[in-house]
Amino acid sequence: MWGLLYLRGAPLALEVTVHRGHGELPRWLFITGQEEKARQILADTHANGHISSPEIQAEILEIETTLRQEQMSLASEGYRGLISTPGNRHRLLITVTLGIFSQWVGNGVVTYYLSMVLNTIGITSVKDQTLISGCLQIWNIIFSITGANLVDRLGRRVLFLLSFALMLTSYVIITACSGSFADSGVKAVGTTVIPFLFIFYAGYDIAITPLQVAYPVEIWPYRYRSRGLSVAWIAATLALIFNTFVNPIALDIIGWRYYLVFVVVLIVYGITVFFFYPETKGHTLEHVAAVFDGNEGTSPNQETDDASIVEIDRSAKSV
Image (cartoon, rainbow, N blue to C red; front, side):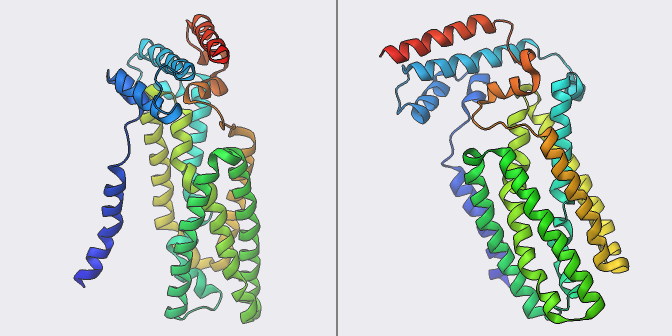
């Protein structure tokens, strides 16, 4: 018994051990007045420790310019600042919808009520259900890590849209097979659901798992980032509360037909991603502001700063 309790603490111990090797964020160091340490981290990360590298000087200038602009405009806006501009309202839409979709694309049913889902397709053995659940957890880890490694290679939109396609296709088949089994009782039809549960989770894991936090963090400017992330968690928590109280009752009353609700939600998810989730691949945090704010995302001294960066870039090419 005690051994099982210790086992639950193993992931936390691993997290603490790994976290000790993480460095501070350069932008946070600039904000807290530790400029030299921030410059050295940027140099170690991007220029093999050469702090005088023109590329590093350009990056430092860009970060300092953006942070200076944000500090100048850091009035006491509170959460009102999240809706103060069209760009911020766009960010807020993404933040809230992503928080909701993280719980409402059907994962809330197959994650927390997997036993009930398997019961509806005739898999009632505790041994079989435990085996499927364990395999799904290993599957989730593999595809979550894969998705995280593909974020900067394929881009955010590609992963989100691929996620939508995989989840919608698999959920439609899960719904159809569950309904067919309920009518016919043919075991082979019910068993067909199992591989599509794995495909559904692959779709969820490659995009929503790694980007649920990372995407809101990178689209919000520094001064709004903590508030924006708070809104993301609030939206996800409210959606989770809904799942907790509604899903088991709905599954008990209407069974597999409840899956149709999430087919509709998945379609809304795909439409929302296609029209409202911009690509941020290849942009620095400072450049992401221009994706949402256009010219408003640049600083009042941007022309001077851009001229400085161009001059540094020319120096780099001449070296």
